[in-house]
Length: 158
Image 1 (tube, rainbow, N blue to C red):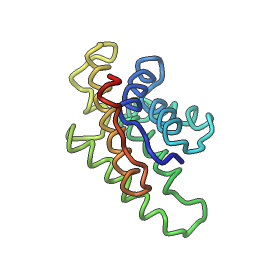
Image 2 (tube, rainbow, N blue to C red):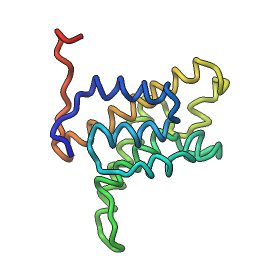
Image 3 (tube, rainbow, N blue to C red):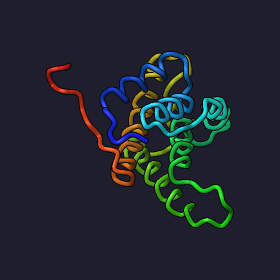
Image 4 (cartoon, rainbow, N blue to C red):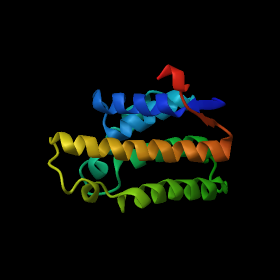
């Protein structure tokens, strides 16, 4: 895992991945793994492919939230039955959910995008905001829990 992450670069690359062909869940797994060096195999991106639109258009949780949940699980999850780590992991996932709810009033995909047609560019722009909200929440959690400092681009580099 890295010791710091440039949040400006991370946010920019997340938008690029999302507008470049990845779905919301794939974007989060791909970009958070890349920027945090989580050691997640590319197979995990494929595993997240079914999450968009509320789990395969099933009316459930936002794919961006689901993708970030996978990444939180990689860092804070358990591999042994009975390991109490699940409590911490679930608490952090709840925090991420609450951060999105604070901004968008829900994490349920169909509700998040109810005012948009799927192919409408305005829907994609709206979803970019959600992706960035999830990125910011993940970064906040990683800074506090793992000491991964959030840094910004030098003002002169902009």
